[in-house]
Length: 354
Image 1 (cartoon, rainbow, N blue to C red):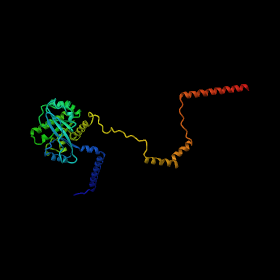
Image 2 (image 1 turned 45 degrees about the vertical axis):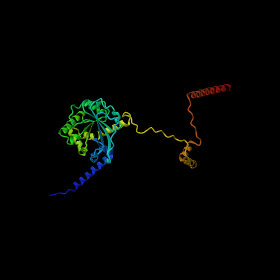
Image 3 (image 1 turned 135 degrees about the horizontal axis):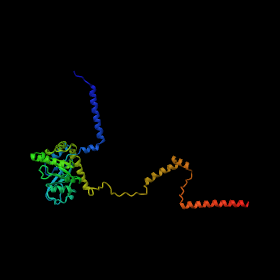
Image 4 (image 1 turned 135 degrees about the vertical axis):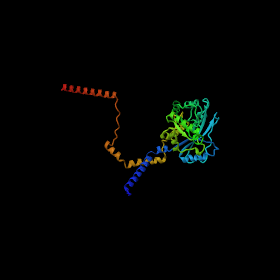
């Protein structure tokens, strides 16, 4: 036998309505937090002006939900005299923000001393050290925004907490690029990517990490939630994995912009420096006529409050007396005392004569 219980269906419908109303209330109460949470970043997309794959890659990134993408240019060896970013690609999807990034391959700690001038040209400056000494120099001394190590290659050294925490304290983030280990580069590249990522997460305690694709084609890009699941496989929590593609890249771009526009990355003038306009004491003719009208009205009709005040105080205006000084108070007291003494003496003399 089948029994139909309509009250259960009504309860389910009411519960769904309550959930929808609660979701709408939360979205209206915290619109800024939800907008920030929906901003996904990919800060490493290799780019050259003659690359035919860049247009479909950007379109695919926009479809997956990414909002900010950094187009990277790699320089190996000595810096050029006048480095300039390549021109922006055409047919950029609407709602996708593009940034310029420079990747410098660092092998000798003594080279590349003009990093401060590069931050004025590029939106992001990233260093790719090839040995432990170059990594130590990048973490402690060099001015950059991102440190990107090639995790598809076996590293001959171990990541140390003290070295990486010094870079994170300076506002530098460590980047993991999953593209070379995902796009069929071989089992060795995939194994090295997993092992290096796990050791980096263990050394940094999961803090100060950003995850980028470094994909040269659209097939190498993964959706944001797939990247979060990949980070969970490496040892990050789901919350840390979401921060690696949302919050941490946003901090990197904000700090890089602050370095370019502010004084030593500390003081930034948002608005100011305008001279105040001088105020003219002579009124305009139109304003003079407008100001004279209420004066005539008050003279003819009068204000109720002013009439009440005049009736209570009196027709004559009493000026406030000036406060007396201590010397004046003493002089008046002495004069009053002498008058009293003189009055008593005259009364006693008149009584004696009588």
